[in-house]
Image (cartoon, rainbow, N blue to C red; front, side, top):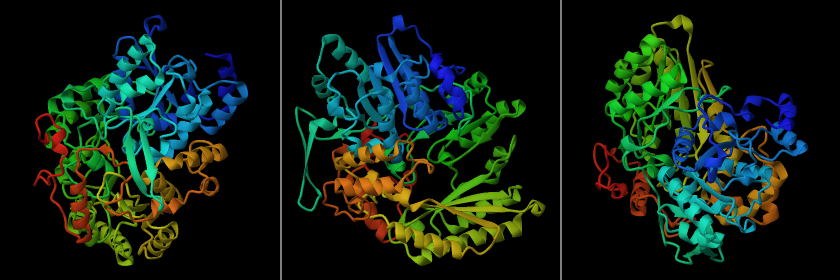
Length: 611
């Protein structure tokens, strides 16, 4: 370890974030490596190491001959300042080598508020922020993750974006980079060739022009770039890489457990949910393979908990059999099983008993809206009866803590819909009073509301977000009308949600704003301690950008949107149909009940959804 690093680690919080050396990390002989890949996560170690996608890519890339993939996380502010004072550039955990010496930097970006983290990490590494200032092939900077379905706000800073699932595309980029380096290509030549890889978007190969009203007039490809970039998917999850042997962190992380991915995609079609649309079509793993991977991962890591991961865990067809097989192994070893993403319309007593066999955890349901009308608007396909029956099942089974998640500011929402959240929470309390088997423990009902953020690739991508003032009024209205002290209420900051909407719906004219905010306030913008409303307001004013133009304005359906050339397989016609149905408060059945003809099955080799 660098002696300078040894001197500063005692001065910072959680020094284990920065040391590496964990059980399961991959070390390679530099003499046998000809491509260094820095897998970068623009947030803290605890968040990044909880990300299953990061662990998958780490394993996939390190399986490649001659490639060494190492992890890099954004340091906490105290560590960043100490590094600057000591002259230590951002480094990779495995080798401790400066990130600026790596061939490729790949950022995994799942949250728009992490954009400043990209700039922070590049700056700490001593790498120019803007792609145009990095004239050589090395280092290549690219990004992937859910946010890349609209990569335009960070177009100035990345050389390219991978759209969709990266396991295969990242490997193909490594092979192309190796060829370009060995043959002496220029960076421009490499980017032209990279744009021909399916799922790769190169911002510099597209010119964007604007109307006088600031809407986009045209997005014009050049130098042979494709007119549309279609996302990449893994066709067969049973044949895909899973990190059965993975890194066990030396310090506590957010999700400190084995995570087992059941399937990708979602059958439900909630109209607000970006993930539910962009991860289509449904692709699931077989039960027997999941059991094998679970036992291998638990045995190797020593974890005492396993969590089943998907967008809607209870929609996995073989869930009962999977849980039985897991518990047969886990129960005698005191390993607990947790099932997040349960739906209120298919939560059963039998499933509940399985969940609590080893260790009982809290239960969380997401009605998303208080009134049935609003649940129909967003196509939640859950009734009040479903919610109360699930709570009854939980209370009869001995649970005494339930969390209920809602969204505020959904399209077409009224004050009556807001008050319906309070009414539903009170009905859950009454349900506990009537059916709880252990009233001596008391009850904890937690209501949380987030602020609705319209997202690209959803039926609500044309909608405007409520203003911050309107969100605050609704939050106060709900707070004032909570009907019992047994119900606690928390809400998300509307200012952060406003900035999130600006970035989610924005275009490449936001690049100068992001750089200005970073220069004023630094990274870690997703953290309350470091979020600066003043920095954002000053940057918008300085750069002459009206944030309400992006966040609060309703877009015309004929408007060219910043992400228009990105294709997910779901047709725009389907999104428009769903938007019409939302305004009529009419629901669309789930994919298992009836195919809605969204178009995503065209991405499957067999031309169908696996489910």
